[in-house]
Length: 174
Image (cartoon, rainbow, N blue to C red; front, side, top):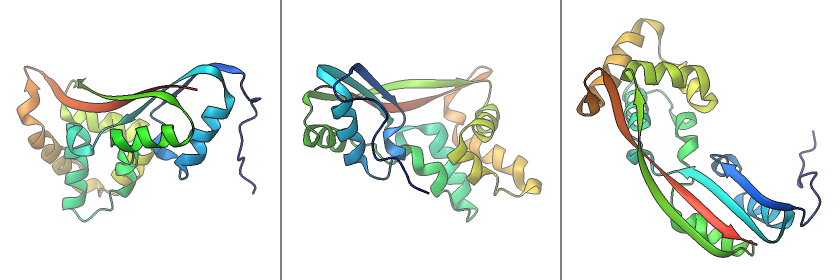
């Protein structure tokens, strides 16, 4: 099977490119940044987001920690956090020829009915994390959920679980 090395878009035809939570999943980030640069018009804009360090995304950190405490390979659940460093993002963009590159860290909160509802939402929707969570033995599932809930207890607010999440936002011009 041949993989596409270029997008089907013509060079210098796009005004704005958005890459939201995707850069970290590409094995060759230099090629991705070069391709984004290629398709943008002169003075075109790139906006890209990635998650920050997993330790700053408390729900995922609690979940991955509970998986690893069981000896479960949590590498798939760590994938969304593989490009957390603002300096690395900036360097990739600059090497591809982008100008006026800025990267900032944004902090916010994820709000769920409970820690359990967070884990169950991830188990249903996020492919990389879903595969790691599927390795928790069914008889151990409730204990696993209790452990994640205990790790997030400090962010329990009334009937809601509202825990910190952190991401990076890159802005650049061609």
